[in-house]
Image (cartoon, rainbow, N blue to C red; front, side, top):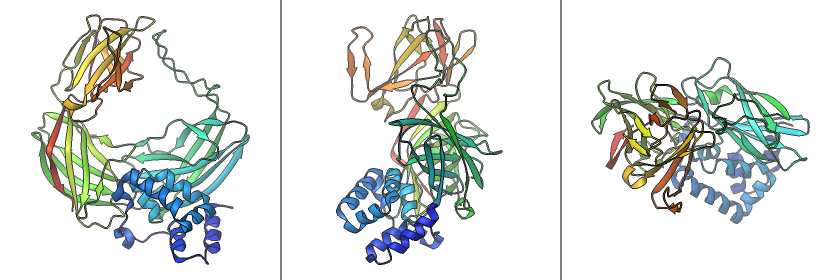
Amino acid sequence: MNRNSEYQILLSELEETPDGLKDIVQRVSARKITLQRRRRLILTPVLGAAACFTAFVLLVNLSIPFASACGRVPWLRELAKAVAFSPSLSAAVENEYVQPIGETKTEDGITVTVEYVIVDRKQVNIFYTAQFSDRESLFVDYDYDMGEIHSWASSSGSAQLTSGKLQQIKLEFVESNVPASLGVSFGFYDWEARNRAEPDAAMMEIPEYQEPDYLVKIPFLLEFDPYYTAQGEIIPVDTTFTLDGQQFTLTEVELYPTHLRVNLKSNAGNTAGLQGLELYLENEYGERFERPGGLTASGDPEGDGMATFWLDSTFFSHGRNLTLYITQAKWKDKDAPKVRLNLAEGTAENLPQGVRFLKAEHLYGGSWEVTFLNSEQEIGGSSNLMSCHGFWDEAGNHYDIWQSGSSISFQDPETGEWIEEEGISAENFPLLGFSGDVVYLEPTHNRVTNFDNPVAITIK
């Protein structure tokens, strides 16, 4: 029996229930919403992610009809938990914007059920369960078949699974639209049996990637309802504004049920590339829409820096007016020199704003590990300003940075004492494959501007 059939049976069984319970069950049925209902007042995005989750827990525990519905419709509770920290997806579920799938496959004692998807023109959210009884947990990798589409990103990597627990896969389509169908393969493996190669600091070499020793791979071909993949609209804005002397044009806003995108175009005469924004949207009722989890920005294919910024969706909001507020901008000056580190002497030149070079330590095998401190007070918030993709030696040879770490405490290089200081975070990464004394780094941004009075731009 697939999920569509289950919906019909469940709705039929609940025909005799009170009006309040009927409304709750109907909200999670698979019927398609009409665009006229988009303006309906939704409390979930107003209260925010944490409040959404709290409200759901209270409703389940204090409302007898709702708790009864969750008991008779077991996936309702799990779906609500899965999207509780996403105001956009919570509003989508509240407005019955869910396509049921209900497809199940079993191989070698592992059963995978793709339960349903929340999909629109630019994003796919897949909800599935994996059941297995002969072990406490499994790990899974995802492999996708997009056909000719290449401009997509996933915030879902390898995951540890508990049998029967609802899991989510999120795919963002940056330039291309969501295809009519999507192939996804679930590769299961035991952690102890995995043979994925990791960088070996002692050998100072980066081994080639090797797949885990999969127990089984289970493929699915998901067909999306064209009603859902067509959803979204473009709101033209064409407003020019200035940030810290740099000029931009907010060309348009892309509005989808799962998220919203703000598109900017930088002026050719700008002296700095925009590498990040802190921003939010607000309507006339005071509802605020902020950055979602996962992908939050993408680059400008025709210039420097970032050009598109993701926010929570206003698709189901009742507001008619919308204003964008910008509170912080991260910059990479076009003439900014590379950071020069003398590892043997422990000195640094041209560090980004708010960053201090703490120490360089020899790793076993002759390579180095470097540690930096970031000051939230000087930056105006948390930020990994030393985020780098690679480094160069004095001869100009490039090396990749394969791993990095961060913490709220750090070890004093002179006393060895571990220190935890409010507003200070530590960032470290190894310089694998390098054994000299001097390296050059190119951080993604070198300074931050905070706007005490947020820059306001009217969207509609």
